[in-house]
Length: 181
Image (cartoon, rainbow, N blue to C red; front, side, top):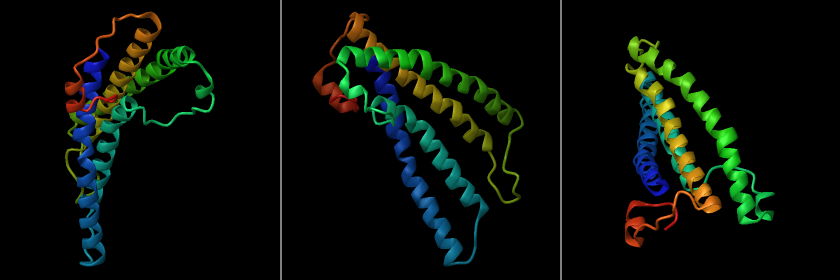
C-alpha cells in the first residue's frame, strides 16, 4: 500500500517541481520589466507569489516521501532501528496526522469561501482566480497526509509484519521515482 501511495505523492511532487521553473521565469520577467523597462506589474508579482506557494505546497509531500524534510536526527541515530520505527510511528500518529487534519479542516472552508465568492485580487490590476491558489493549501496538506500514512504503514510493517510487505519489481520502482531505488 505504501508503495502505491508513494508513487502518487512522487508523481505530484515531480509535476509540481516544474512550477519552480515557471516561478523563475515570472520573477525574471517581472525584474526585467520593472528595472529595465520601468514598468512594474502587480499581476506578475502576484503570479510569482501564487506559483511559489503552489509549488511549495504540492512538493511538501514529496519531501516527506523522500525523507528530505527537516527534523532533528541527533538522538535518532543513537537508537536501534526498531526504536526509530516506534518513535516515528508515534510521532506520525500522535502529532503529525492530527495537526495536519486540523489544518486541512480549517483550510477547506477557507478555500470553499474563496470559490463561492470567486475571490480575486484586491488590486485593480491584480490576478483573478485567487480561489485556485487558496485551494492548493489544503490539497498540498492532503498529499503530506498521504505521505505520512505511507510512512506509518512502513513502520507498522517493520514493527508488526502487518500489512505484509510486498517487494515491487526493481525496474518498476526506478521508472516511477520510488523513494528507495
